[in-house]
Length: 559
Ligand code: HEM
Image (tube, rainbow, N blue to C red; front, side, top):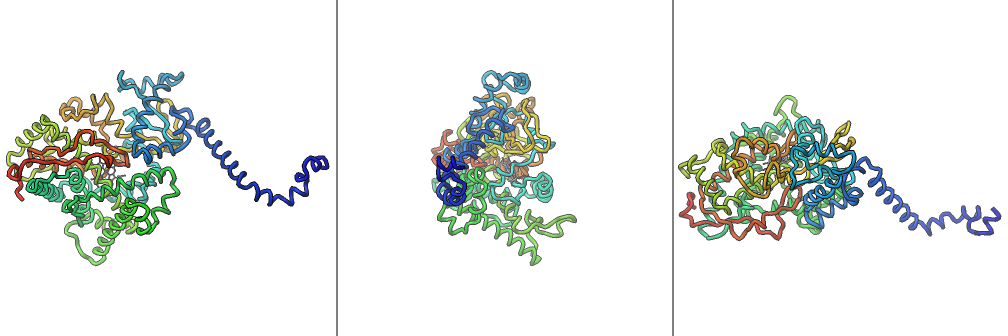
């Protein structure tokens, strides 16, 4: 002690004790930074070298931080889906040659590997997530028998926890979905076909009216409006009438797109979500118009659910039973547990947003390629004329479905609009999973994406080409169908797929039967590209799909 004291008086026992608070006060900043740096370095080293996914191919950055995904989705504007594709082309190729995994790689790829497209089957894209490119894994992760469940971090960021869409537990999801299923069955959709007809008629009148004034018709917005008007009528018996608005209700899509960066940010920083979503509308408005619109839209859906609740309480019968009347009715079925209005606000919001841009994009892509390619347009017109000689009749969904060429046009529209362009992350259940020779422990996030499935060159040769005839050959139809995953698969498959088919057939069939001379207005193929905001959105600097045609006398609807 004496020696120590001589060397450094401040290190003597008594002096150290008495000045500890002083020392801490002096050095706390350094200690905090040092501790933080140590924590950070330990985490980085763990994630890169000792994490259960450390052996999965992929670069350093996504293995150690979620900011990699955030960077491609926020500053680089919805481009992570393309970066994932690049990672597959670089890192899978490297690992495919690795000793010990070669057999699995070759076996896994033998069915759908071509010389031109050697892509790696598995890459690590965030610290706890891998992405798969081999189409054969889709059913394992998403199929009816799969026990994989939705990733809470990813879906939690949507801020709609009580909606069926974002429900994490498979058990709870089964119960929530059972209550919704009857409204979206094929039988129900056929019963409600008149709702879609009324919207399609409105659209045709709009196209005719634009011919009178010489205005182009914004089909990009109109196709979304059809979907929003149909689902709000269907769900609440209270249509939003976007088709009547001058701008065809474009605010809705702008709102969903505008809130995209917020979702990507909440995925990287989940603790930001509740404080930001809890902001009063007036404060949110000053922060960001998109966030304010998002919150405003939630207020609107809340009011709509409340109106339905009030009508049930007052014993007012709706014109016809709707989704929310049924869900709020305590006598709906024997074991029905009535959700609260709060729970249903998430449901209502999720259903409206899930319906709009997905269906809108598919119709936009199908119609764009039809009106820009005379051979396709002529084939569609010929088929429709033969099936419906009288252009003024109301076309029926079940008759339209039988038309092979129109079906090919709609399927190509779906394929090249991707449905949900984003990856759909699922969590490996108890026991983990063995994929591509890698053991992925329970809790690993595994994802695949329609972007890569729909570009698979074996299922879809020349995948970039819009070719309806790839669906007209019965011998290859079912093989291609396996790789068309716009609606996803299994228990979490889109609940609205019957309704969406009905909308797409009736809208496109009627439009092309009534208007045979539509031409694109200014828009080109370069405008038909997407950014990933979960759903696919055209970049703001790209032109929207608008059409012009002949005069009003050339159409069958006279305004
Ligand atoms: C072409 C049109 C559509 C496409 C491509 C599409 C695509 C999808 C996809 C890929 C999913 C799964 C998402 C995931 O796993 O996270 C999904 C789920 C869902 N979609 Fe659609 N959708 C379309 C139209 C609609 C419509 C019209 C509705 C209206 C009811 C709707 C309502 C829903 C709902 C509620 C879910 C959640 C289902 C569940 O988790 O059980 N969708 N959709």
